[in-house]
Length: 134
Image 1 (cartoon, helix red, strand yellow):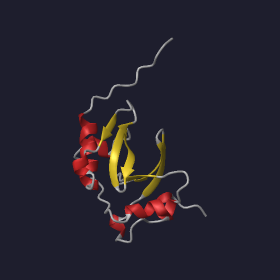
Image 2 (cartoon, helix red, strand yellow):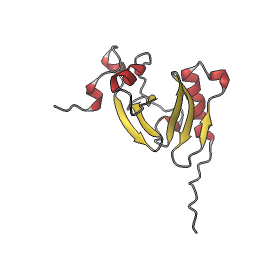
Image 3 (cartoon, one colour):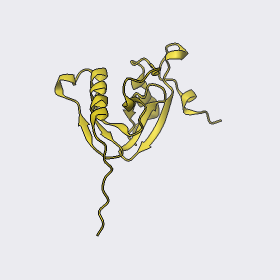
Image 4 (cartoon, one colour):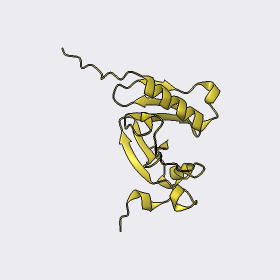
């Protein structure tokens, strides 16, 4: 029997209201695991096991946004591309491919780094990549 991903393996042992509903996303930058509610994201390399990556969600509580402070939390164009441990180090706009980097002052603050990257995403002027015609 095949179950939807959110029931396959809860990443948290806390009460159901704070459990992450994990989905596997395929994007131009690779595979990702992402909580459907709070949008917490981890890179899911091809050679990795689902359970090992899903455990990275455990220390984080799921806080679905009732009011979203920034559009990046629900914008599918905002993609975290690289992590240094559990801290997001680089994000990208999937539409214009602009990259955003975490400053070294936030290199040990996962929440602060994600907020910083999201703020930079909100501030950028997204321009579609111009097609080159021969």
